[in-house]
Length: 153
Image (cartoon, rainbow, N blue to C red; front, top):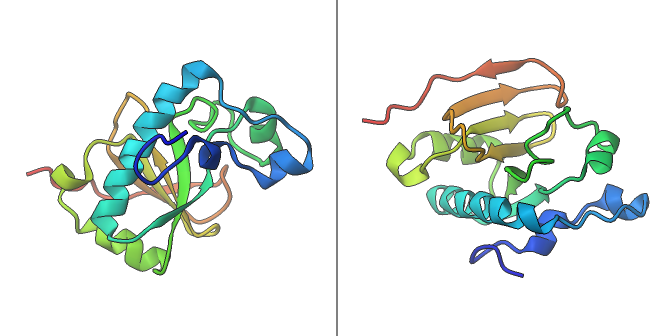
């Protein structure tokens, strides 16, 4: 099932860890609408960056989240987040392009967390829409550095 022009539900549910541990990582029906919101946000990020995105983590059930070391109450377990890697571009160049993009083009988001140790951008679109840019150089439970808010002018 396509959630947006470039992202499928199967991509959001796919997990090596889930396959290895034989965990059913199917998103419940009540989560699908949220994943559509995330996919729409990823489409805006993809267009702003001008490159395809590889989804590395999307929906996670509670057991899978624990196994991958995710934080408790992770936006992934609520259906509001995905981790992506730019295709054909470094993470640094990808982030620089997004930071240079007009907030009107990028649209609303909750958090964009640059996870340098994993080489991914964690993109959250939960309803709080805090518009936060963060950098996290360690694992998911490490300290984060908040970047200045982008000018919405």
